[in-house]
Length: 205
Image 1 (cartoon, rainbow, N blue to C red):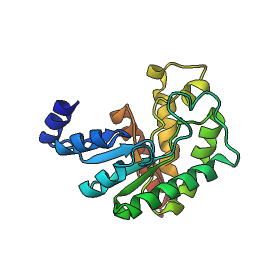
Image 2: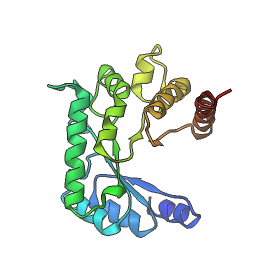
Image 3: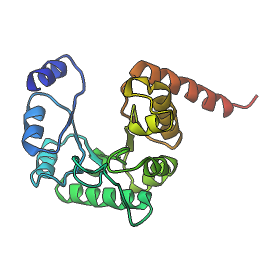
Image 4: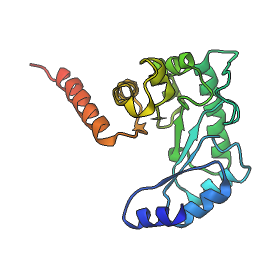
């Protein structure tokens, strides 16, 4: 992994490293990675918040429920899922700030598909705007997720482009500032058309 990160960073590419492990964070940051994406919101490794604070880089705090190996077995929440996500991320922000991470460096991610049923994912997507109350930029990664397959005759991952774009536009419509996608040119084109339609509607005459 490190040679790839180093080579891409040297070429001017902004690299985000996706890990829960402080040691991996340190190594990737040491060869040029510019962002940390932690699916545990810095809660899995007791050193991760310290590493991120010392690096001074942007940090993505993602919501999840349960360990990765079993989180999709039978996802369950005692309260509305969106409230659970909000409180989890709010706690993560507090933990990050207490560790010395500047609030303006924090990005939050509701964790679409991480410990959530299809219904949970749809509830999160439909209520996404609530998360702006956390006061941090919002990232959404719904590209090619299983929810798209479940809603479209169990389409396999490589046939979920249209559904991925639909969710990207839904997230953008609720103010998500960052989208994590597989099909970059297609999603950019869709967003440009969506933006053009919206901006045109705001211009009189």
